[in-house]
Image (cartoon, rainbow, N blue to C red; front, side):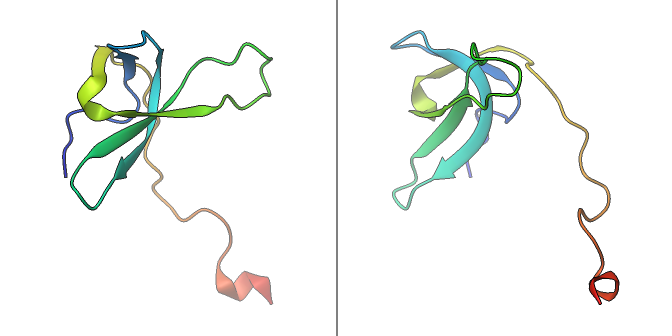
Length: 83
């Protein structure tokens, strides 16, 4: 799998100029990779911005963007707790 664009970095589409954070990676059967990009929301703090999918070949890394600490334990509850 191509890791040219790491998730969490800020990227720019060299064709359209669209900028945002790389939040998703989508690999197709033919080997092409698209990256899901989210721009900063202008509709308020609680509005989830739309994700735009752009071919990895057209993206340029601008800066390190954001980094989230990895999850170290399971999210949710244990099956014994459900009873």
